[in-house]
Image 1 (cartoon, rainbow, N blue to C red):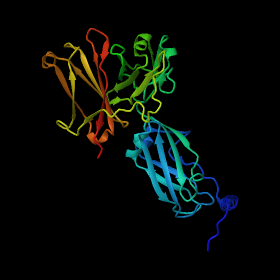
Image 2 (image 1 turned 120 degrees about the vertical axis):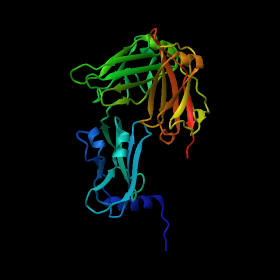
Image 3 (image 1 turned 45 degrees about the vertical axis):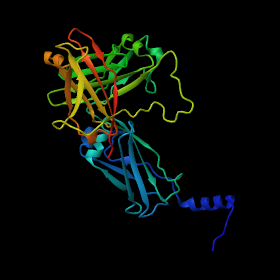
Length: 353
């Protein structure tokens, strides 16, 4: 037998049912100290922990998840509460944990036996140590260098990291969507404590890119390894805002040319035309996949034979399946005579299996 009830009665019954339903407690990570997770702990894997609260039951379903600031890396696991009145723990394997290196992460969980609007835990925010960090522009706001900063210049910041050891060689690449708004800088880390590196970037590299974009990436080479930073991509403000389509549903989305899964000697071949280059210049290919850890900076000293051939073919040491749904590629030339120039950029789509 069933009884139909009105909305007021429904709400009264729902309130009575949730009297024994305590709010969910926040999840934590055992290895975190003062909101930070060390790189050494990442290499061993992590343990997520969340508490049992009144209203839950043994066998109740849960979903625990970690999301990263780039929104491309994540971890999630479904499970059931193993025992009442005890914390539930979930292991994150080292290979999954390392995907969060150098990022801010958010940790939360859902108890799926509660109504969806009541079954979400508070969010725990944590900072994960990395051997190398994404570069920053101090003046950028919401992913944009505002037009008000263009005439004064900006500060490019390389955050202090354990890879910046004395004697390490740092190569910084600034690419602007205007061909001449590019530069390459090399520096060597001196003795003393590790500190942020701050480089002033003058208006000459900013004003030509009004309403355009810049990308910044750097490498750190030492006696132990060569590391490549995550890519920083920023738009640049202008005097006028970019027009917007009133009914555009997917603004500024391009599919790009299709890059098929064809390799040569186990590498993905890319071609640079030698137009605008002379022997002794350094041609630089940037190849950046969708996922953290798929950033590649390939350098090649231009030879007379390259000029004669009209092209340089470089092999990117990446597996096709590791790159994600798309890749951005562009190039720069570091001129023997001084200065640098940049090519247009290319978006490549990958076949998803």
